[in-house]
Length: 300
Image 1: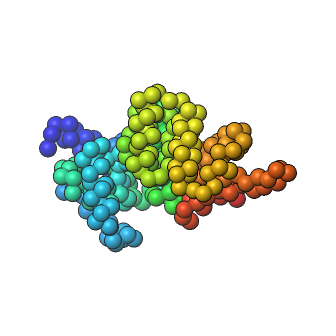
Image 2: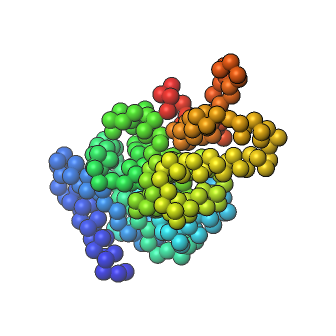
Image 3: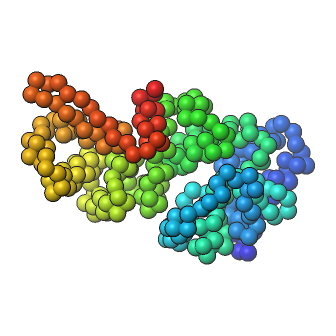
C-alpha cells in the first residue's frame, strides 16, 4: 500500500476510533460530518458486498462498459461503505461500480465511509455539504443521489431539506445520466450546466459525444449548442421524415421556443399549431423515470 493510501486509511480509522472511544453527541456529529465530506481510497479486497443488496443480477455487458469507462476516466461517483471492524468495509451503495472496478484491474476505489446507524446525523451532514458554495454541478448531483440512496428521501423531501424546488433537484440528478466523459467535463468546468442540460436528451451516446467535441472545439455558447442540436435534429428529420417541408416552414420563433422547452424539460418537445393559432404542446418521454422527472418539473 502506498504512503498516501496508508495516510488516508489512518485518517478514516482515527475518525472511527474517535467515535467509538468518545461517543458524545457532539463528537458523533463532528465525526459524521467529516466522514461525509471525505473521500478515501480503500483497497478493493477489503470491501465486501452488502448481503441485503436488492439487486442480485448485474448485466455483463453493462459491467464491461462501465469497466472500460473506469479504466479511462476512473470512478467519478464514489461508493459508500460502512466499517465492519478492522480494515474491512461493507458496501452500502455502489456495488456495480465496485464490481466494474475489479474488472478494470483497480486495486482501490474512492469511497465515503459511513456510520450506518447514524441516519439523522448523516442526512444533516450531507445537506450541510450541499450548501457549500464551492461545489460543482456533479458534486451537487452526487450529494442529492446520496440523500436518495442512503437516507431514503423522495425528491420532494430532499428539496425541502436543501431549500430548493423539485425541478432544480431533478435537473441536477439528470446530470448523472450523462456518459462519464461528459460528467468529468462538467466536474472540471470544461462545459457549463447549461451545456450539459442541452446534451441530456440527445441520443444515442455517440451523438452526445460528437456534439460535445464540437462545443469544445468551437467554444460554443449554451445558446449556440442548443441551436446546433436543433439543426442536427432538423437535418435528420429531412432525411427520414415525409413531413420535412412542414418542418422547414416552421416559424423561427416557434423553433426557438421548442429548443428552450426541450432544454428545460430534458426531453423532446413538439408544438403543433394551425393557421388560426390553435394547437398543442407534446412532451416526449421514454420511460416511467423520465415521465416522473417531467412531473417533478411541473411540481405535480
